[in-house]
Length: 141
Image 1 (cartoon, rainbow, N blue to C red):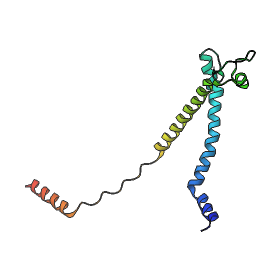
Image 2 (image 1 turned 90 degrees about the horizontal axis):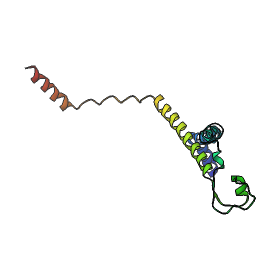
Image 3 (image 1 turned 90 degrees about the vertical axis):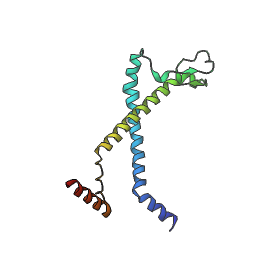
C-alpha cells in the first residue's frame, strides 16, 4: 500500500475528521469566550473594583524612561520588561469560563446517553439448580 493511499485511508476515518471539526469549532468558540470575558465580564469586574482596566495592569521590571506614559503598551514600546499580570487575569478568566462551559456540555451529554441495557444473567449451573431444588424441598417439609 502506498503512502498516499494510506494517508487517504487515515483521513477518511471518522476519528481524524471528528478531530479536525473539533479543532475548528474550538478555535471559533474560544473567540466567543474571549469576547465574553473582554467585553462583558471584565468591564463589570473593573467597575466593581474601582473602574480600572485589568488588561493594563503590570509591574515594570526595569526603570521606565522619563516621559513614557505608564501604560502597558507604552512601557513595552520603550523596551522595559514587564510582568503583565492584568493580562494573565483576563486569560485565566477566559480559561475558567471555557472549562466551565465544556464541563456543562459534557455533563449534559452524559445525562442524555442512555444506559446500555445489561446483558441477561447467565443461567446458573446444573448443580446450583439441583441444590436450590433440594433446599426448597426441605423447606416445604
